[in-house]
Image (tube, helix red, strand yellow):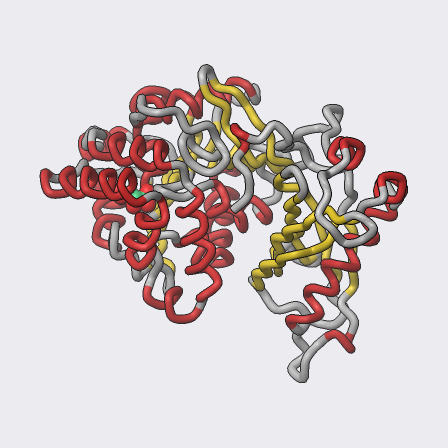
Length: 420
Ligand code: MLT
């Protein structure tokens, strides 16, 4: 687990100055079926890092300070096969800076079709010439913190929205798409959509209390989440956005419609529902909050992951099961408890549905056990301009479990909104 933003004075959130690098896949890197093999993916990422470093700041800052970042952990996610001759654009970004460590993320996007083929999360330890861990020299840390860097090209930035500061992933140009994650997750559930929906300005914040955003004790509600998001849009000078909300993100989207309808240009509701909590549901919220307080976020992860991820994902994507577990385990208890209280007390949005006039797409994982396809059908039946897409082989976090399929239906819907 890396250091958190709010208690680590070294944390930095600007995109590095490392340029994106194009790497061609060579035939000898591929397996008998012509796919880029697993080991070669790591080599490609490494090649791109050296190249980016050479084209960017070079080796001097490291040499001058007698240090080198040594890779200690690499988590690779393979999204799509890649073949000989494919050109991959590899983006290298810092995620976190600790006292003696740094985390970087690399994404390989195929130039031909802009598809995210693989990404890697790397944990480096800064070592001295004898290989011992050593504090990150100021010059090296500062390398990546260029205040002059434009936020438009893509980076994780911190935006204060009143009393809290949110971490927000912002990529691309075009009309705005605001991606609101669910509980107890963070902005990374949208990583495929953020990486691939070009032609749109993708904005994926961590909600207060979750991910890397500030997590105050108490004061959480759907209204407060919605206010945070509108303040964020104001800061980014965005008048209207298509709002995509997954599960709790959908509850927040309803709140945005209730209170700020003129800011919503279109709506994507993923794995969510309009009904409020039943009495039993409210009791269950309190039980999970008590569990979080008594035994921490990991206990919440153990309880929730089997329900959040679909059967197919649990059987075929063990690395995703692990990532979602880690994502939840990282969530601050204050944010988990706050979200549970906010969901418990949220209004029922059923009466709102017939008044939604913006184009609406409803997406649901076929194996979603928390908000099953029947909930999605009810939304489509009640919202005047709504269409339904069911995603095979996905559960409650469809955007993450079946990212390519979900990004494709988002892209088609967004095109229709743009043209309409
Ligand atoms: C979510 O994914 O946001 C939650 O499962 C929603 C809920 O518990 O109602």
